[in-house]
Length: 268
Image (tube, rainbow, N blue to C red; front, side, top):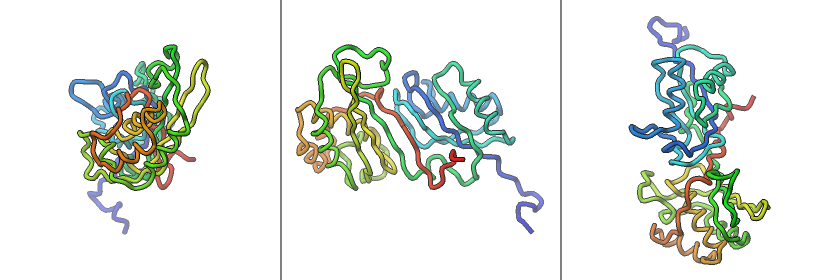
């Protein structure tokens, strides 16, 4: 006899995975806070318009204040089964006018967990170099007023690849058990823009330390400006000392771009 057919068996609530895009500027980060608005709070309040007693949601990454997302993933449990299209549309209706959008909603197995099932996270950082102030991209890039050199930054980035103790590039507020992480990719591309240049940093790893990506980019920017060399970055890494890190860049250029799972829940 199937144990699920036994008397007293409580059927698990249907679980849904949500792919979420947001502008982080109005929020104090992803995680719910008592006194400041968060993305988690916005999505949970939209869910509770559909089910007043809906439990809290879990996400793949807790982005900081001002950090954006192109593909954040969260999961939620609801009492009734929803058509995924209708769930997405209903949530987007209740999220207006906040800059948060549910790109996809899919029903997943009860064993799926947005955070613990993830095998990789990818971040994008956008750095704009031009003297004229950003207009259309204001709040979506980190802007500096001087040109940067691509090749030295790429060489310095290669020094950071692999498994290392990243204490130098870890916030003192980081709560991770260990500073040892494996960095799988840190690719930098240069894009021509009117009256300037944009550098895009594509960073990939299973997981990251608090402020790790922003510490990387702030340090590599110093290399591009000629103030540091790739050898300086190597020495900073080997120092395993937060004081050896370059400047930590601001959050507005950072995006959680993609989360990878053993089986992509959003792939038809």
